[in-house]
Image 1: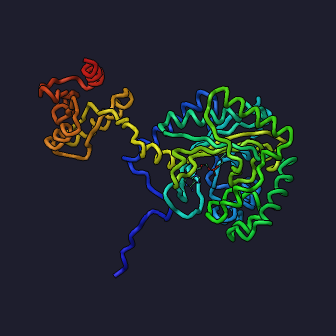
Image 2: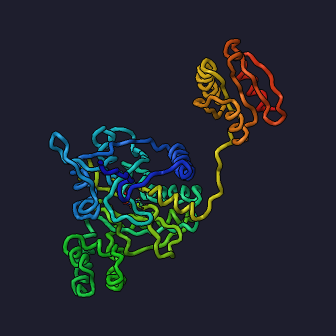
Length: 426
Ligand code: HAM
């Protein structure tokens, strides 16, 4: 006999079941509200992109590209990647659709699934949901501050507690090489105290050593030179301005001199958001920064840009932990019951009319027994039940039953919606 196969979700991926949806829905609605208010236009890019987009954009030296991309070869021989993040696809779309000729800045947001082949653990998935806001075509530091402000306010509206913002500047192509040199010098003279990964990073991507979580590397990290001391005058002024704007709006932040972020395209401002940062397992809820070279690097004109992105599972987890008060689905007040085949057909039509009239109902179209249907109506706490029996179907009428008093009235089929609406208002 053939062996029975038991299917499970792929490792690191997960189902979001109906009872878990309320947090996700809440986050989605707030993101849409914020996007509307600040005039961000929604963009949906394909789940698959040419892998080269991330090699060039995210960076060949990053963990995302080196270890975490899901790659596949199309029948035509193209190497495609399941998108691990949203910024390079947005930059690609900006170039491809000639958005540089529109009034600048162009403000875009996205919300969808992303994929990284990471080691699964709490808050780290191989398929996760992310939303992001990107402002393309504006270099003024006020936009960096505004992106941080939008992110912060969104998190508090979502219900995240104890939010902290860490911020740093990682300079630009003028000043970063000098810092890199000083950092490598420091790392070289302490290389015996670094983990094996960092020994490799020291050569390929030394800034990433500052991101290492290994206990062994912490001391070397702490004593490392700080980027702020190497900023050129342009980057220094930019950073100072961002901080001034944040002070102006009294947004609390912490300067984190070794914050570098794990993606290669950043310049100047970088930031990350946490909740309850003091807890050991605390993962970033979101992060972002400025990426003034990315669009040019991908073949577009020189275009300054800044953005942010958040992991929806991590946000849902943060508000679940804080026991966000439930925003329960509104109780359905009307139940639609039917008896017999012709009544079932009428009910099918009636359901659609009720939906169009925005009267929310529950029904059990597949059930035959009226008794069972009425029992269900009581169980869900329906205020009224619309009953269509064989006689009613024939006479184009329906019975409206008051579930509290038990009183019934017969109404012409085309008057049912008006009558029900009136009853609900009483
Ligand atoms: P990121 O820091 O790689 O930045 O990801 C942003 C957020 O996505 C993280 O803070 C985290 O909440 C969530 N996230 C990332 N990986 C996972 C995972 N494996 N499981 C669950 N959640 C995850 C970016 O992606 C940049 N594109 C952000 C940006 C936008 N920079 C400029 N504009």
